[in-house]
Image (cartoon, rainbow, N blue to C red; front, side, top):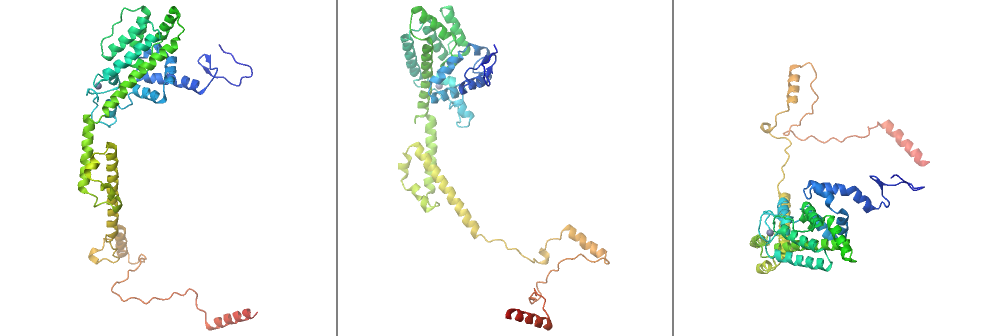
Length: 395
Ligand SMILES: [Zn+2]
């Protein structure tokens, strides 16, 4: 319906609906949401026909409830732009893309959630136990609760999905979420049926709890489940007993040994302090300290080499320019000069080209003639000039 308020300056419309409060966030979502969803579909995160199954208003509310660091992590995790094996190998940061927990190749963000190595399952089970308790305390519809826990278990262990003996609406909800994806559920993309079913259940049992708060609470716990898997994976990765860590540490120690074998002799005296502590005490320092030490020593060596090069080039003998080289070493005249000589020889009647005469180096030096800047006057002119000066000075 097209309507306007009296004396209204201008109004903003989106399709056939007027935007009552065109705030920055409202305009941004109108302009960007479609572009973002198209990108997710293009990248294969969500099937195109599953987009309308997602409760996008709930997605927005859930994202706003997260801390900024967690929001950034969700977007990076969903788009594989984080430090998983496949991405690090693609960026050239790692030689292999193996999982640090189970050593399986091609570690991606889905594998981070599904990995079963190094106590990852204990972390997962602890989170699902919390989820189960929370659903019970929030008076969740029993079939819905059972279906959610079962599907998460089946998805994690890659067990084929089978719809259980649930009510039709629960089956439809689970089928929709199957289509949207369960990794997407952990990353905050729920079907709109979750809230609808829970709202009806609250009405049936006369509960005063709010279905939106229920689904936001479930999404928060699912987010924590995924987040804890990521944290656990990073803890294992950065442990010092990891093969990759051990290899990196050994390479660093080898470089330090090499620097100590070269010694500080070639460095500037002001840089000798890098080698003040004995080698064993340096080798037991933390990894970051040793990396910084190597960077400083490399910089000091580069500076000393540059300084040496500059000093050597300063004392080098410079090539002298010989003004009159011997006849046999004289360069051949240019081609046009040869042509001029030939023309002068062939046409003796014409005046030769004016060329500057070269002085014979064996001839005696000529006396320098003083150049007269003022032409000399004769005696009569000089006398009249002196008379004029004298009379003018007397006045
Ligand atoms: Zn793994």
